[in-house]
Image (tube, rainbow, N blue to C red; front, side, top):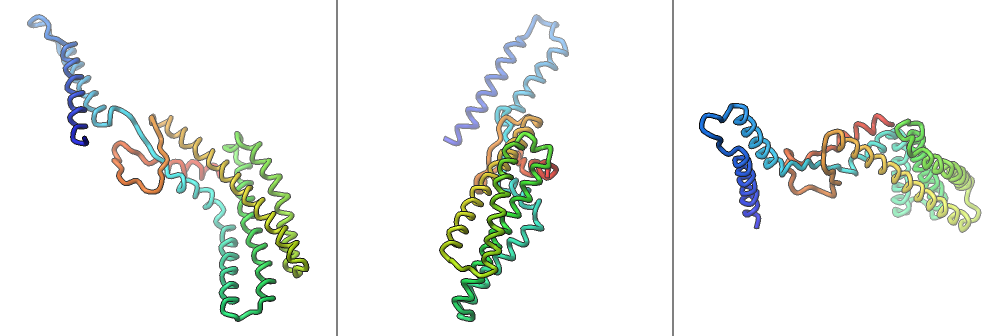
Length: 248
């Protein structure tokens, strides 16, 4: 089947050229002027170009995961604290596994670190949210962002209370764990909501680039492209990242 495609496409081109030739059927002897010859050559060249470009369809693709990294890179300084807390939690688990600290010490420190880790994650997301709200380029999404900001402020107060509770020593482990789980679930919802807003902006930017550059279609890259003809399938990921970086 694959070998028949060039044949069919070539046949279509041949028939199209034939149609043009019929349109330019030889007139009476001596009346064929240079202008009509040039026009004929131009139409044939146009058909050949369309054939080379897959019928004139212009297609681009976007690596959405790479584009989303712009939001991550914008708060790289705060991300270090998240990484540090994750590393401390891992080290504590290794210490406990090696029996170098008691169960009581482990539980106390684990409560502190899990609350601090959640606080670091929330602080990171709130910083991203504030950048988006402050940007005129997110004005069309500001009402939704402000709603998330109000929820984030309440959540931030609760998380900081959990940090204080853990540092002073958890008296009621059941109450602490219940409040921590509720805060963690609320953070997950907040993080997902923020991600959705960021995704909407990525789509908007990709669409505007597609329109300005005259693309007929923009595909979202999933995993790895097995094959890409760079002459006909264009990667606009870097253009999207550059534009959103300017927004933040």
